[in-house]
Image (cartoon, rainbow, N blue to C red; front, side):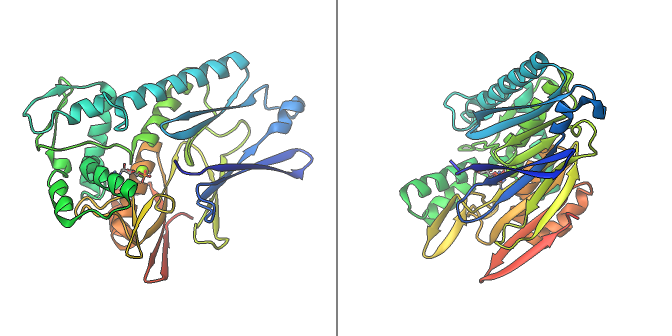
Length: 358
Ligand code: AMP
Ligand code: MG
């Protein structure tokens, strides 16, 4: 579990405006990502300013191994509470279906059919996430690939035992990795995994997908101004009442004070980084994000932040760009003109950075 520390430092900006600044650190030594959300709290106490009675609500729950935080604006306590309750139930439902950590989850039952030449009828959620993932795999030329399961399992075991996988082991599991081995039948929502030993892992897209789904529920409950923070990955709906956007501050992650402050709404912001989960072997660090083609954990990537039209795409692209690296990402992102990226790599002690985030 990443170490998450939040700090709330209230700073008075003027008589009519307060800023709440939340700092999130996933690792003690490196500031990975932080954001601040402008909060028109003063309006709650001074309704004469004219933004109606919408109040700010914050709810938090541990889900999918991360703290999920909801920030909602509503004029009714009961509406806000019901929206939050339903949103958390929805995330939990998705976790039950999509988590490869859960014995008997739908995704693990599907993985168990690999190579048996069987079609399995699956839920709309599982079908959709596989459909979206396959499309992103094609668009990223396989940098993002949810069939990395066997490789990820091998690395997780290696991490637990602190033992680097044998080349033969890597070679064996790699054979079962390729998004082209997933077959989908849309009409009756059936899936076939064509190679034995395949294992699906939607860890690179699941949090963004869950946040988008939770946001749908919140909107159905009549709330339009909302933010979901899934352990540092943000999915944003409309801005707080009277604001033009949520103020999101992104650090470069390179230890310097390089930051981007963005006013955002109706987008996803996701960060992928190798800083807190890695295997060290002969002085080299290998990330939990793997290159599907080599089966090896990333070596040079430090951190990627993506701003995209929704949480699902932001999450998947942050993983994909981490794998692709700076040079390939520049080309790859031409297929995603609405996505903005900030990538940081360190090769031979030299730091390279590329940023299309303004
Ligand atoms: P993220 O933190 O969103 O980049 O997701 C990392 C997780 O995605 C890993 O823990 C794996 O479960 C999974 N994963 C690793 N490599 C890939 C990859 N190349 N494509 C898709 N998912 C991956
Ligand atoms: Mg991701």
